[in-house]
Amino acid sequence: MACRHDSCATEAKIPTTYRQLFEAALDEHLQAIFDFSARLSTTPPEATAVALKALVDVGLSELECLDLIQSAATFGWANRLEAAGLQA
Image (cartoon, rainbow, N blue to C red; front, side, top):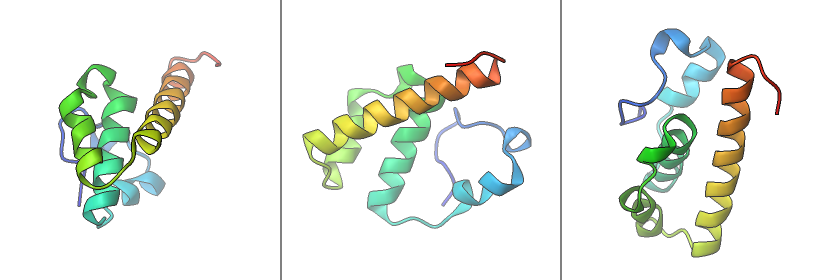
């Protein structure tokens, strides 16, 4: 299943090796994690309480949500710096 929100990078910007990740068929649990991580990495303001609730709804604990948020935010930030030609 492809990423379900418009903020994901356009197909032209996604290297072929990573495109498979966006097109992979994921179960509901992994899809929620993927969607939230992609949202937080590409457009942090869209990672709202409603988006976070989707993680809780598929069984993530508060600690797992915190770990996911910290990981996705850190890597998203580093990727944006790299894309801008800067280093973290």
